[in-house]
Length: 380
Image 1 (cartoon, rainbow, N blue to C red):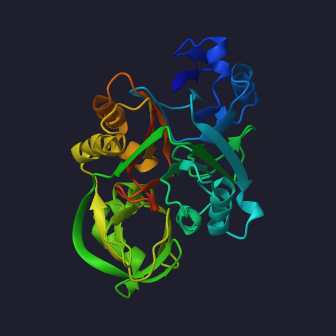
Image 2: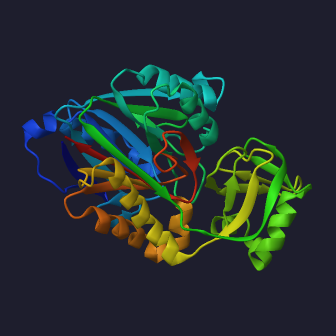
């Protein structure tokens, strides 16, 4: 397994590695993550195609790019991947072609399902697709219980437009599934948040998918504002500092949800994932050291599936909320992961509007917010 990395900075192509033409021709997958404006340039796709003639090219807009131990904005990071014994198949669809996000998730996994499917990587639009419904659709048809990881594209802190593309200029509403096949690929995955919970536990009493109306029979927004105090004046931006921990009915695990918008008239809050009625919730706040430590914990967790071998590639997908909270310390969470993996592991990824990963070692994937989620690959 080979991974070759490049970066476009100020419209200048930079080679991190210097592969031969033969090595480039053996690459079957390219992952390119960049700012919305950069990945939507025709010349960006053209430059990648010129170098990687035999590869499927998957592109996504971001809220920040990860390469090595660095975090960048307004660039494109490019990863050419060549496998020795692993087959790769990609499929793309658009939310407009399906009844809803649940059906789009079913469509992708049904078209990639096979006896030797080892792993599924999802790169999804982050504004037009409901991430919770998407993973529910995938889980409904994941008959082999293969690990499913990935993330939702970003658009900086604007939350206006996101785009993904398979062998074409990225566009809104696209959902891309990447299937990896064979018995020679070791996949590791880990996901941690690092936020502190505070305040009493409460119950969601009225909601509709990802829109929350009432908590304990009272206006959700009014209650949230009471806890935020002076920070309430800065909503919805300040909501990234205070996500919600949610325990879904029948689940032993808590997941994190980010608030995307508020409606003062309805007293409601719109989240990045579904908020089912009957779920138990608590408020959360940032602890900078724990956020950074969570990255190291996510990296360490991936080794369980790798028999303690250092992976060839680690894809880090972290939430835009973490980046906005950590600010100048953002690179520290990437460095924390790199220290776990060591210098021989190629690191890439992006800041997202949602992360997809199983809980611990289970194979049921979930949509996460405000986490560092890591997927690792090693071919044996």
